[in-house]
Length: 185
Image (tube, rainbow, N blue to C red; front, side, top):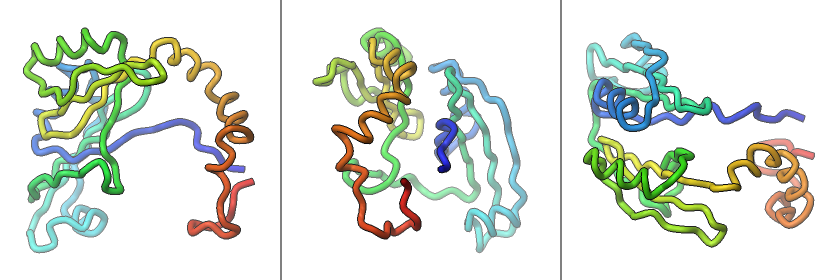
C-alpha cells in the first residue's frame, strides 16, 4: 500500500514575484528558500504558456511556512488577468495557516492594510477562523484549532484509521472500478 508522506506545498501564480515574497515574509514570517528561472522553451512546452511569444518566462519561488509546508509561487511573462474561482466551482479555493488567536491576527492584518473578507467566527466544533486576501486576491484562511491542534498532531493517524472503519466508512465506499484505477484496500 502506498501512502503520502506529508503535505508538501500549494502553488499560486502571482502578479509580482518580489511583492509576493515581501508580503508573505512581512505579514506571516515565511522566508523565501529557493528561486528558479525557467528557460523559455520549458515555459512553452511544460506550462503551455507564451506559445506566440519569443521568450516567455517563469520565475518560481519556494516560500517556507513555519511548520514545514511550502507555498510555491509562479510569476509568468506574459501574464493573464486573474480569474475569480467561486466556492462552488471545482478547484482550489484557498490556502490556510494554523495560527493562535484569530482576533489578534485579524487586528494585526487590518492594521497592516491586509484585506480581511470576514471577521473571526467560531465553528460548531469550537475552532475559530477568518479569511483574508493576499496582494493578488488569493484567499487565505487563518484558523485557530485550539486544543484540536494537539489532537490532530498526535492522534491524527489513529483517528484516521478509526474513522475510516467507523463513522466515515461510507465516504470510502466506491464502485468496483474507480475512474483513476485500482481500488485501495
